[in-house]
Image 1 (cartoon, rainbow, N blue to C red):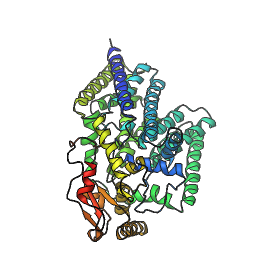
Image 2 (image 1 turned 90 degrees about the vertical axis):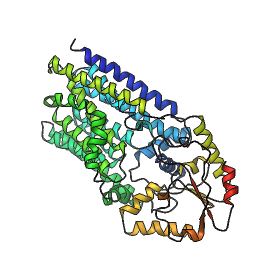
Image 3 (image 1 turned 120 degrees about the vertical axis):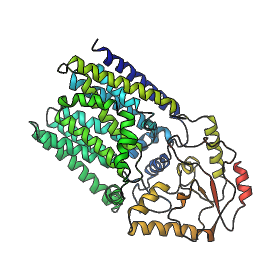
Image 4 (image 1 turned 180 degrees about the vertical axis):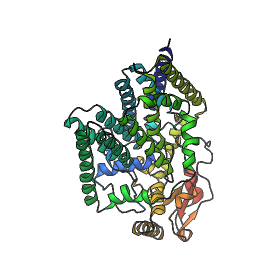
Length: 492
């Protein structure tokens, strides 16, 4: 009977995995953004495929996300086969998330000898899918970063020789080249190895990681004339902290989502190896640091949720744990999955419908009808999908404007001011007032704001990104061109 809670937790976990994957597959082919920052990911993939630089000086036309290049390179390779759309980008993320489920199950199984506990741990992480805003399959860097981080942890935990240490170092370097916060986990694993009997292998791993990161930084830094170093290393460090997130990490995200499962983690404390423990602490620290960064969101909690799931799995399995403790841990995990399943009822809309597609199609045709480039700063992916030249994403613009008062900011502001003075855009489509951040004070000398509201007759929830965010609402036209009434009428 002591095994029953663990078996039930594993069964519930399998249901959570199926629900997560089924939801992701059902919306993978949706042609428009599921999350409002997906648009810049699509722009970066298109740039790689067309031979344009991924890292360059910030302008009104393009500002990259402040991430290393691996996710975009992998997605571009797949897009070279499947075509430029969100499908290859989301396929990379979903495949990586499925890999995370496998790695969590396998890590727990190798630690405890109990595959059932491993499946329950993987299911616990999958059960956070809806609580985490269904982020696991978005066209963003996070799922690939986490998969490579867990793969590096697995390789480091079970390596037996220098070859294995090199593989582990390369995997952790690949995680860093996807999202730079992986540096914390690489450091934690190195410390754990240097403090134990495998210190020689720890040195090999550290040298592999450091050498790979140094060489790629040198190459990308030189080929981008230093802009890679600016975006990946300097920019985010210049941003202020979100002080409310110090407590919000616990009260907004961790305790409401996995507070019950933390009890299973406490039951595992005495059985956690130094390497696993430090690595999970590093994953939690990476998530905490990302959330403290202004603009941080629930995606930063994914490594934290994975770490809790892994440690809870250790609490459930193994011959050295008493049957009572294992059953208690299994019960806590089962209850946690059940609570998260109930939360699905309040998750809201997670799969766009036919109305969303129709509005998106209508917008694409409408954008193509202007006699010049159209600036959609909140969703440049719309331009890409319509076969038009995109502009910089307003979130990437905001990163530069709030991150520095030096040359990059001045270059960006001059570029925006020049485009406005030249009336380069046939129209500017705005979703909210922050879309115009960085625009010159004399904007109204060159553009006029149309009084008509875009998509006024469309229900408010239609064509709104699943991951949150606004939708096109306001049109600005050059003062000497176009009729607001006629152009908004064409959109309908």
